[in-house]
Length: 405
Image (cartoon, rainbow, N blue to C red; front, side):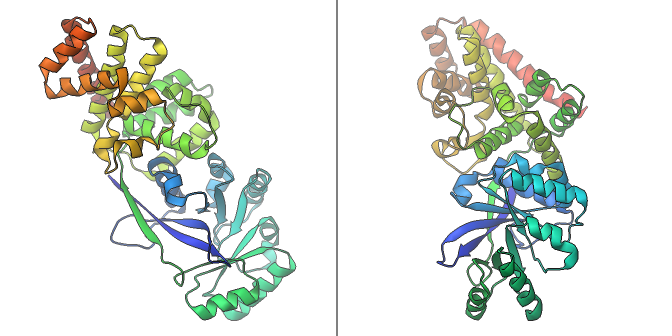
């Protein structure tokens, strides 16, 4: 599946990029908003930017401006993402009730920057105005409304961002008003970005949704379900890589990633994945192959008497090994997007003992029996045990069909 996203730069008075607004896009032919549901559109932006694409390669060390609906604010969805990166844009059509004000106040206390989008000052918006850090003034509004809003912003010491700036005259006008940041076609149109992505299984999503919604979620059961879906595992690891930029340890298993993420963030992650409506059977064959590799690699680790931790690493290596086959990036570049151990990365690159096990898996898939025999002799493993493991791994992968029964 192809996923899409657009980004538009936000510049300061020195024409340096302060951040990017990340915008919903649904296909390569229309570089404009075509969404219907605000919750779904924001969920799509977040999952594409933080779970499917490599966030840091897309925005560098700049800010990411993302629109949030009232519903997502109340649910605390922004808390999934790091406050040092995210600027929360509050849409102009949100109904500002006490629950929204409380949610925004909490986010502000947690260190998030609050931007009010397409804002025109009105007395009934005073409470949300006081919580805003950045006021985005739409330069397509009437001049008197622009100047009234800018005057109140200056009086209240609010940072102003002029948006939809299209001419040099509007740039100079924005500077006279006291705007600190600017955004619009004069500087750059939104740039459409895309990437190939593997689709998680609908059955996986429904199972996890049921598990995380229970009174006492069973983390072991959740781990088991996610571990059977390569696409969902990839998204989980990209989420960890996006949210925990300063995390020094490397991930060796799905259970470790879930422990780091925490139950609250896991629930919101699953909620967003559901909103995005990406689940289907289109990638079943690819995911079956990933599950086969994961089970087969782990089983070879057992036959080689590798410790349990190593076996979990081997499983994750097999699960992630389909990534280069669904991407146009080189293996070293794409593996940098995942905070997994060097053993896993090196294995997929074909280096070391893990690389030997991974090559054995590929050789078995391709029917290169002479190379399978060489591995068997070198590692003193009975060839019949490898054959038996192969059959069991195939049967395990085929059990994915049960997700759709």
